[in-house]
Length: 106
Image (tube, rainbow, N blue to C red):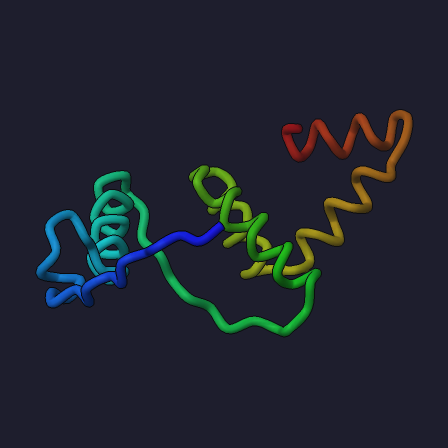
């Protein structure tokens, strides 16, 4: 069985001249405008080439939508001993734990 297929005529227009065709740059610009309207802005960071680091950055990016979380992260970065103190308090049991949590208003 044979079929005759006419050769397609090469299109004379470029992507921008064709109606409805949008470039990647136009789509990205629209995405940025929508994000700005939602109060978001894309940033690029340089991080170690490590799956753990990548996962942590994505987790932090989701978590910082909350203002209290942003304050907590800023506090930890300013004073890393807070993490050590917090871990020790979490390990406490009994009346020592109750006293420590009362002092810290937890």
